[in-house]
Image 1 (cartoon, helix red, strand yellow):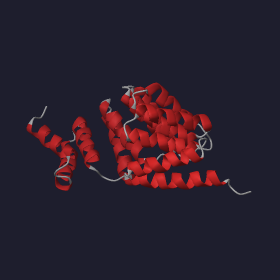
Image 2 (tube, helix red, strand yellow):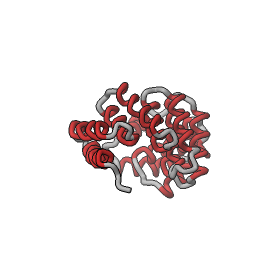
Image 3 (cartoon, one colour):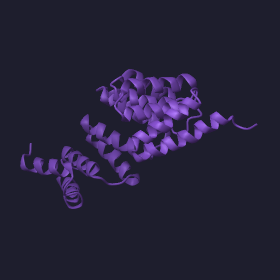
Image 4 (cartoon, rainbow, N blue to C red):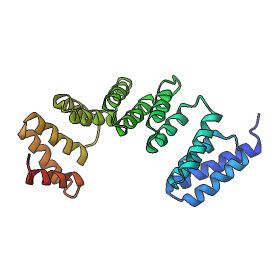
Length: 229
């Protein structure tokens, strides 16, 4: 059975719209996405992408409307829920955002539940709920133990809660799977300082200065060396 012509035309226009959106050509993206929705107003993915577009354009009301419509059309789609959760958290609607992310994470058909759990954790962190964030991160790592971003977030969270030994363990786990960056080296400096291990703190500090001399974290490091305490 062939796909009806307007439906296929909407799919083609959406593909073009997504490509323009990826390249940052927002006007061209809007033209193609609008056309896709004209051709098939019940096209859930087109509403999802329209939500992303209007978020980029700074029209939060329209973005929310399209995200909501996407989920109304495909209420069981975990990818839609996960994307909407990120938007809700950006809008400081933390409770709804976490709820949406957790719904996505529990869908047995969702291929990356660990990402939805990470989003729930970031939402909780933005709301100042460190305990909730830790719970979501631990669940994310239970799904995928070598998930770099969740390992780094856990290291940072444990550091913020002054559990330096645990922070060190999570950072070491991160460094086995993730790329070194100014953020990871600066976190390493602060964790080792917290543990009183000046030699290791100095090792991270020297790498940060040598490899990322102009990074914001290097400026913070230099400031901390000028004004210790």
